[in-house]
Amino acid sequence: MAGIGPPRRLLFVCVENSCRSQMAEGFARALGGERIEAYSAGSRPSGQVHPDAIRVMQEQAIDLSAHRSKAVQSLPAIAFDYVISMGCGDACPHLPAKRRVEWRIPDPKGQPLEVFRQVRDQIEGHVKQLLLMIQEMQNNR
Image (cartoon, rainbow, N blue to C red; front, side):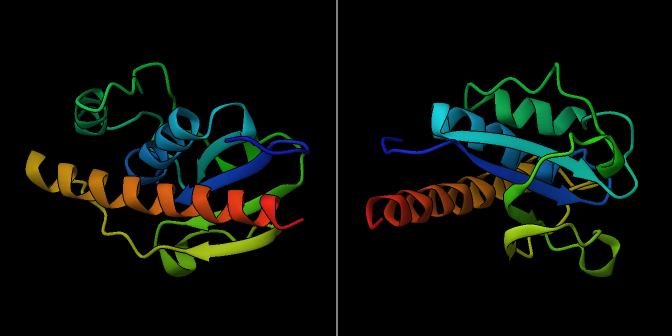
């Protein structure tokens, strides 16, 4: 993403930080390049990234195998430009940000691999839209 100014800091939040928010972080890092700093965290982290999330992201050439599920309390003390909730409602913590976004993406945990793929594709579309919006806002400055 071209443009002037510091990278935009994105935080993707869900409950366990094992599927949806991890996939969103992976796409944001891969597609956003140096213009984006992407993070993810959960209100009750599971401690690991779900193996099926890793598998379906590898199909898109994005490696989550070194990622770890982490708590919101372990995030660096920085200001986030966007906090994006995956649709966990009150279970997702309210974190300060310049903009908050709710995506309402279903949790694929416990579902067949095909559901993980559908969720992955939905997340990819949302991340692409968000990155385009951020780029347009930067271009209109």
